[in-house]
Length: 205
Image (cartoon, rainbow, N blue to C red; front, side, top):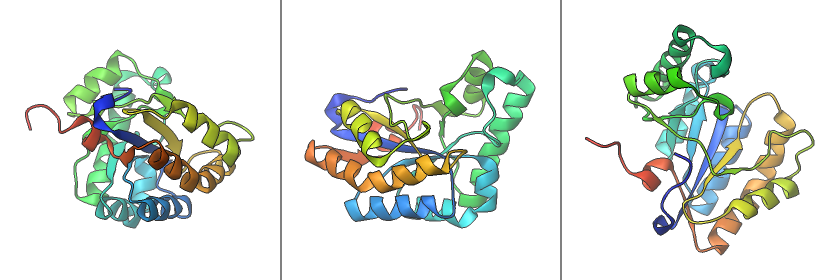
């Protein structure tokens, strides 16, 4: 899934690679101030380290999704390793938050046949994005992030941002840009919601 229906009136903000002890609270505070919701794709080892943040994300009405255990690229993982990464990441979120996620985002958006089959086995829905905010790029600035989001801002858009990972400077730039991003969403007559609001529950539930 890369985008939702334009009729939804929603934009799905999503945050990868957390939780992070400094960045995730900043994101949550900005979302709360704007009345927005989002989906947080969490790395299992980070969720194990900061379970209180997993619980805070859920308590504030957001959704969580699996982003593997260690953020390992699917193309360099055999089927067995990939399954372990996905299962361990899922187990970490269940243990921390007491809720079973239904969403999975492969690191770097890279997936293969083993990703699809394992996601189906674990009853996870694969979610990609329609707009990359570019906060992971070297030298990312709040202004550049806002410009990229504005270019992709449309009903049903899924925006990819980061609240953790290997480029903390870019994540800090994202956090600085986020209030303006949320203002742009509202100015476009849209609402920031999580993926469950945009796509609905899995079929059969």
